[in-house]
Image 1 (tube, rainbow, N blue to C red):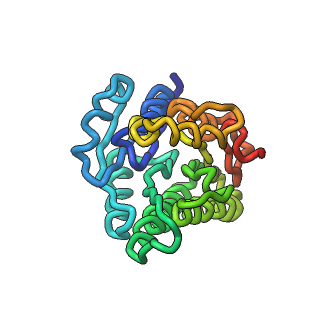
Image 2: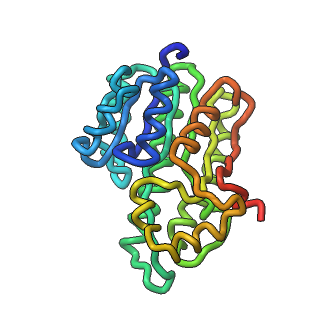
Length: 249
């Protein structure tokens, strides 16, 4: 375990966010962990590796600028300098284009893209004001890189996140703030297992992945750890597909 570092990770009550939090705790990070309702973080905070570190529950609604500001201020107050921001929280929407409402569009875009942008902005200001390096890792998706029916708004939000990654990386390169993203294929979280319990749905999802397997939360978390590590010091503006070859087709 290396020296103590700090990370703010959004959307950590379960699944991928929890796996990322555990992996970072194993690497020696103290953590600010967010969720809409912090009571949902009880099981995450009780994970043995996280319980060994300083772990602060933080309420965050990415659709609210006031909430974003308050959450970042709380994280900085509790942890001091923040070394790493992981934009993991997101909203999904499975719906045909012709049926999408304005409210649904706003909910997905405001959470996945607008909220991530303004939280990243606060992190960038934080690093620049302190003259410290920083790392941002955002959770994009293969849906932001390839087309698929029924996922339009979600895919658009993730494509925007990928372009945001490029833009921030260029603008902050001279500030020693690295900005990268990860584009997972289907990640077999508990909630996804339920969605893919139908054999036909599972077979259809697998048919798009050349490797013939879904990713695990731990594999995605390992990619976050790498991009945050000194070994990735020259990696910025990059979106790393962890997708079993899906985007190589």
